[in-house]
Image (cartoon, rainbow, N blue to C red; front, side, top):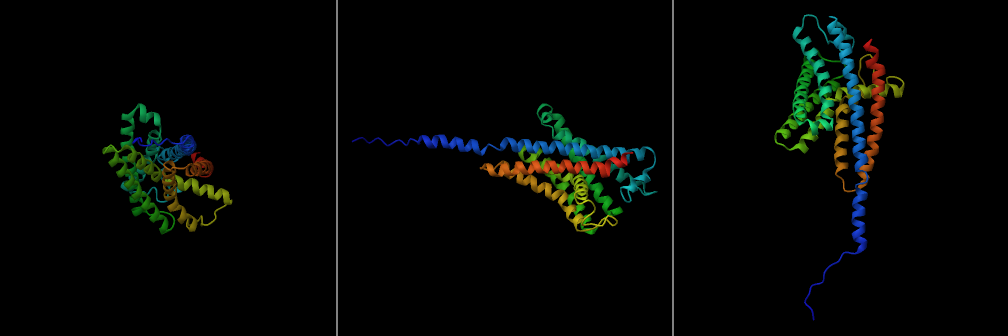
Length: 287
């Protein structure tokens, strides 16, 4: 009688079914990545349009010596005799343009691969701009106030703090060479920095869809919709990003499929918001 131990041989069905399930689970990985990249491209183009507007309106007014014109858009943007305060506002606007340009460069994969030194230095500049812009926004809020209700001011302050936290963590993980974590916090930083831009495209899209100001008073710039939007301008994009990360690492295809379709819808909504903001806010003031 033989003492040889039986050898377990997996069935042909299991051998075929396992890779089939794995391939099926990866079915939506490609479309999910494409959907994420498509949204990024649309977002960057939309932010470049806002940067062009900032240069065309605020920059031209400053060059012409008519900085008081800023007050038509930015309440208390220019106050005669307040040189320091006016310099803070001007620096805030300048860094808004710089951070858009630096952010666009950071999102280009070819630069990360082929010019890593440029990616590193541009990233440092981006983080520096984020800090300065956030501090400038807080100073403007505390010294010159702002339009809207207290809830909106609180939301702006929280956004500024979030920007600085994300910037610090992105830099910390880069120094520690934990590049996966660094990339995630850098993307969170990009979304937090984009809060002001999200607010504008969300507001104008809301107005166009509802054919008028619904849920807020355009004279006082207060109302429940604006209070919600003030927080949603950064909390909603950050929440979507976290759901994207979860979907990307999911073991089944359903979360990736759902997130791919959601990103497709959000990309269309973002493009529509960019179009409405350009028509309502940016283009008319460029003349």
